[in-house]
Structures are given as C-alpha cells and as structure tokens.
Length: 118
Image (spheres, rainbow, N blue to C red):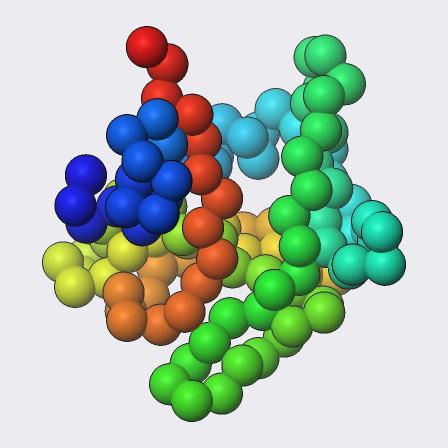
C-alpha cells in the first residue's frame, strides 16, 4: 500500500488497478475519444450494462516535458513489467484506440483509483 499512489493519496479504500483489471476493462467495453465538460478524453462504456467512465486526456510526462496532453493519456496500473522489473505497466489511449505498455516508473502517468471492496 505504501507504494500505491492511489492508496497513499486517497487512503485504504482506494488502490491503483492491476493490469489484468485494465485488460478486462478493454475487453468488455467500447471506447471512443470524446469531450466532457470541455475536457478531451476517452469514454469507456460497458458492453453489458452501459455504465461508463471518462479518462481525461492528461498526456504523459517524460522528464521535464509533457506530451500528448489533450489528445491522449496514460494511466498506471499497479502491475510490474514481466520483462523489466524497474518498469510498470500502463494503459494508454489516443485517437487510434487504446493499448497497454510498460515504461520506467519515474515517468508521469495519471492514476485512476478503484475502490477496495470491504
């Protein structure tokens, strides 16, 4: 928990999703680039119940520069890369769709917390 940004920021009732949870989301939803309240992002809608979440296009930070803000966004998982132990996995969306990648953990990506069921 002390290494999980969502738990540190929002307390024990929140955590960062695993990569398996991001994959499940990708497989069971339809997504589209959209704008909500003037903010560009990616709307993900469940194929089974129609519920949706909106991920703002916050971009990603690489060292001192911010890239793709307004057109794409990266969201961390709590899963480490299987190939490189210093990398973590993340979900990334852009105008062409949504994919999963891994990268150095010191790069800036957004965190979309999930609630821990009690």
